[in-house]
Image 1: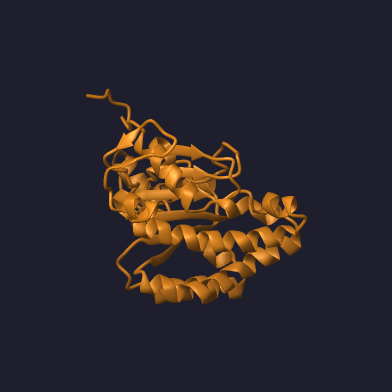
Image 2: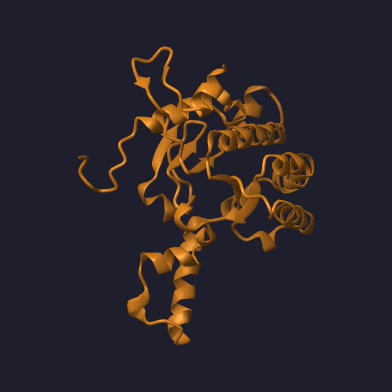
Length: 261
């Protein structure tokens, strides 16, 4: 049995090079990833930045399959932020074409693996070809009942919070709800992750490339998320790195403000 099979079958295993014996790995229900380091990966190889983004797309496919096999319910990937528009025009243009290529080649596999595509962010502001590729992928996988592959595309966490506050204010203004009815549940329902219900908040957030910040990614939903930072650049984030992240998550004591029993 392969290491990955042992991990995903939750059987007792000894971690090579570690002193910890795990009876069972904890699998995050909602795993979120800030996919960082594509440009640096390409620069190290004296290649254009877009080559790193292309290689990073292949890593997305790999990690999607790993997460689905592991039993993750929601995989949210930070694909393009509202701030990324300020990058060089040729790079932005390439990034906007990636979803077209990605979904054209990967949707059949997603259907086969029962994975459903969803998005958060302002999709309607994307170029027409990009928008069509995204909506087509969502439609083609809409009947799938397995893992949700959720792309944060043209997404900004602060804007999401402001938009949610504005939506609640309008409901109060229109007499649809009272100020006293505004609570965490009502607020969370107005966020773009509201459709995920109880799975909206990530259990684990991974950031690759060595940076240790959220960069406007799910700031409200990440209130009690565990974080895993790795210096590994996103195109190099493979099965072994995925397993290391799960092993780290397994050792966390998630108390949510309470005292351990």
